[in-house]
Image (cartoon, rainbow, N blue to C red):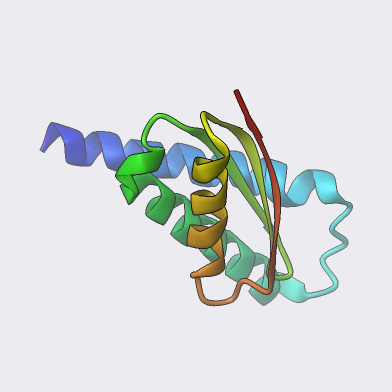
Amino acid sequence: MNSLLKFGATLTLLAAMTAVSGCAGTGYSGTGGDTTVMEDLLTERRIAREIFKETRLSGSNIYVGCLDGVVTLSGHVETSVEAELAEKVARSIDGVTSVNNNLTTS
């Protein structure tokens, strides 16, 4: 149960962080309306959840942003294989039109 609470808290934190970093600083004008913003936030959460579930990415520091279906991954992973895996996970989510992979490696 403790790990489930930790997972929920992590997802909530990730969602809040990605909402701020993914849309607020991108010059988003809201032209897509509330529905587009909500779809982007849900897409961010789905990607963050799938990345969290991927054991090969468990030690990674990945931030997810989404604007009109365009996903941006940023943060740090250990290897280029992990960066590619994170991108693959993001591309697998419905609603994603493209992925900008800005992940850095050691």
